[in-house]
Image 1 (tube, rainbow, N blue to C red):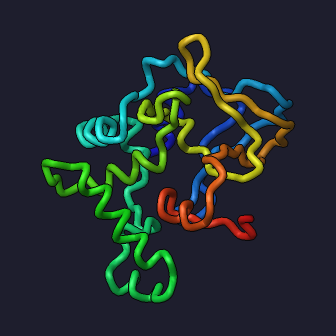
Image 2 (tube, rainbow, N blue to C red):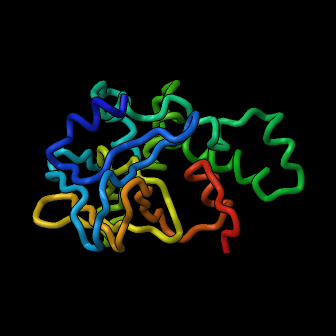
Length: 203
């Protein structure tokens, strides 16, 4: 499904593409040698989905397009979808109490008690960009850009400029290398709860 997404936004994408590199892994990779401070992606702001977590979740639940069809269909790497038995194996870990607390907090946002709310709310929470530093509730889902994986040593940076979402390299990147974003400095507890992964040697 990512092929259709790539084609849909081709005029806004430069020298990079979405690539699958494992059974469930994918990311954005350079298709050429790229110099520092080179434009990778420039999307007019009207193509962004903007709102708070609840608004974006509700919006995502009603859409069926190249973007939504490219999103993961399985979020079992997120602890809020683990079975009670799986959570119980964490006996003695702080995560054992953090997981049900996180799940309860997310579900409490949905007064309508929709069956797929937790799935889409988790999707939004793990993919949305905070586009206003003064307002943490002003978020955006950004097609293509949210395919970038996290690194504590990213090689890209993004900003909103001249009514566009702009992504550039922050260092030289070789052809075939993965392009990385930073989701922020977080503990592995936060990383697994919010994004469904942990990092080795995460200091």
